[in-house]
Amino acid sequence: MKGISPKAIPKLIARDVRTVLHHAAIVIVLKGHSAEVRTNKNPALNVIAIIGPGNFVGRQFSKALLCEIGIGASRPYREANIKRGGKRVMKRHKWFTLSSTQYEHLASRLFKLLHAIAANRVATWKSGDRFFLSTTRHWHTKRQKKIVVYRDQSMEVPRGCRFSVSPADELLCADICWAEIHSPRVLRHLQNLARFIDRTLSQYRINGFVRSFQNLGFVKKIKTQLRAQLCISIAPHLLIEMLRHYPHGAKNRLFSDIEDMVFDLLVEDQALEIRELALAKRVLPHPASRVGETDIQIRNHLLQTERTGTSLSRRTRVYQHHIIFEVFAHKASEWATLYRKS
Image (cartoon, rainbow, N blue to C red; front, side, top):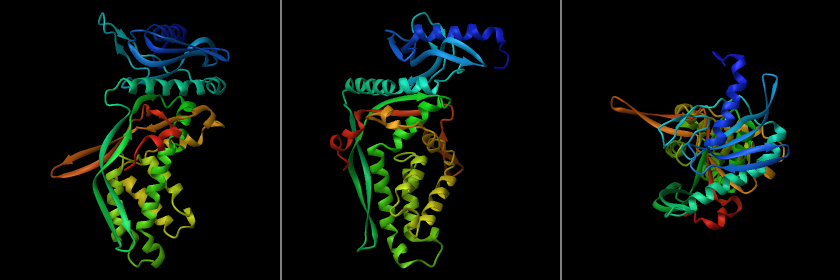
């Protein structure tokens, strides 16, 4: 708030409210325990704006911009151009957040709205609600003691709409992170990956090993595969979450070694800046009643490759100023019956 006069704050708050009322794609106005949803036909801001009473520096305001959610490529609170007239819509100020009472009354309706936006958008696409991805499958055979690679395997991948929210909206971010790690689709992926690693390394678990764990042949192959998947088919925070689904958990003889391998891999790729799991732990009680059937995937990590001379280095870029997430057109419980996994 440097450079802003205290006398100007009420005017700026009122200006932010007027801006989103006139230019936001969807406006949710909170009135007590009810909420009124308004839409603008030709919005300059492709965002969902939530307006309601809020407290700032000990002062109560009857109308304030409590939260913005960006739709698609739009980001909350950013300035934008008005297509007709060439004018600009000013940035809004992130001075307010939803109180826990406000959020609990609104959350269920908000997640249904996000799902409806995703379903409506996907329904207009000629390519439909899925695309086919050519992928490589790995399978460990105990008898032959090797990893068999099946190339050019077809996999159906669901499509959805991306949204973004400020990390300052912690209650909403916590529910988003919780919803992802409890998605049946994500759970199946993590459980399959954990079982594949345990099966591949089972000979070391049963017979033991003499050399350093990190230098064992199958361990190197597992690390190579995980490095190839990192930020493409599995986000760094989900790789850590996978450890919770490892067969027999901490009782597994190799669990501490697997844990070290995962963290070493994340350190090598500079992907250890993880906030999603911490947010998921700060979720309000009964998150399932708010999230409902919304299937969510966080898209907050981007793999970057940098060339230095003749060598290539990898690093993971994290979007610090926003939580970017994708909401799918299907319901979470329908995923297993709608999509072919192989």
